[in-house]
Amino acid sequence: MFPGTVKVRNLSFKKEVIIRYSTNNWTTFTDVKCAYVPSATPSSITIVYDTFAFQISIPKSAHQIEFCIAYKTENEEFWDNNNSKNYIIKKGIAPPRNSPILDDTISSKRYPDINHAKIDSWTEFASWTHLANDGPYW
Image 1 (spheres, rainbow, N blue to C red):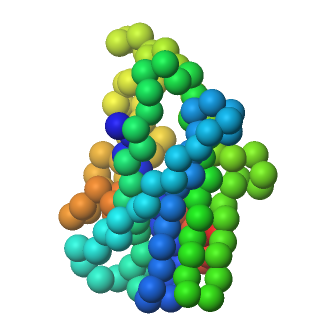
Image 2: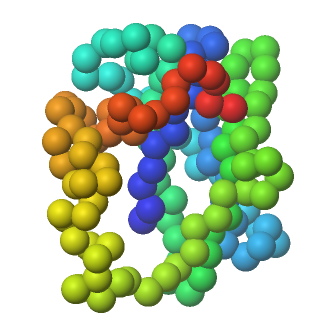
C-alpha cells in the first residue's frame, strides 16, 4: 500500500477528492476516494486548506504508477494532472546504507525543519516553513 495526503483549498463544505491512478500506462485505471483528515489544532492554514488521505494498492509487478487528482464541490470540478504530465512514481533501487542520501547530518543541515518539526500529526508535516500556501492547490 502506498499512503499519501492531498491538501485542497476549502472552497465548499461539501467536497470530494479522488485519486485516479494507473499502473499500465492508462490501459486501465482505478479511482480511490480520499478521506477527510481533521486538523489536530486549528490554524490559518487549516481554515484555508483541508487535508485528505488516501491509500493506493500497487501490484508488485508494477514498475511505475501514474496518478492525477480530482477535486469536486457541489458546483465545480477541478483536475490536477501536473500540467498534462500526470504525477509519476517510479520503482527504484534503494541507496546503499553508507549513502549520503541517508546521512541525517546532511539532511538536517539542508532541511532543518525535518528533524525539529513540532507537529501533532503526520498530515501537518506538509506544512513546512518553506511551503507556499498563498494560492490554491489546483
